[in-house]
Image (cartoon, rainbow, N blue to C red; front, side, top):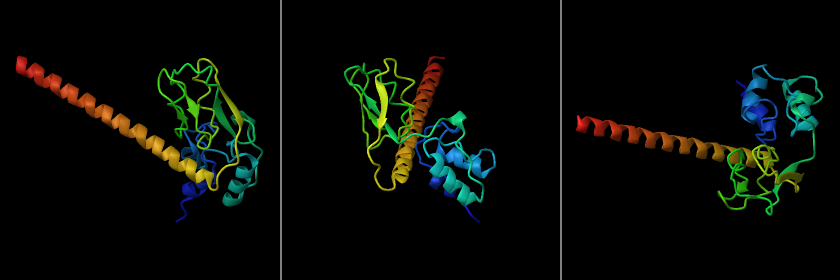
Length: 182
């Protein structure tokens, strides 16, 4: 049996930008495979990705749906460090951990990791982040992007599990304390 989701996902640019209307490239691939989404919803992939998806799925290529954005040259985020206030609001939305910094300290973008997803732009309260032309990507960049996104997702999941464990332990200790007082 052909794993259509994996084959479709392998053709997507792995920017995890959500501009397609899905939470990332994998959910978009699942929607395409399930017939819930068209092949023309990925602005970062643009006409090249639409063409390869059409070929894979035996469909006619479609123009990029402008509802999801426009095709542009690859871009990366850049932070004007003189204007950065260290709010750290840009860190969490970055799906590949390309922004480094800490609260109350200046942040910077690791351009070789940035996918140009634009998710860091809206939370910045001082508009110190802009997109600039990306340097030429490394070979097999989408595979690297996928691994970075998976590492990011695993880190967030592990953090949530640890936090839930801590809360459960506090609740248990509080219940034991109440029982001891009774």
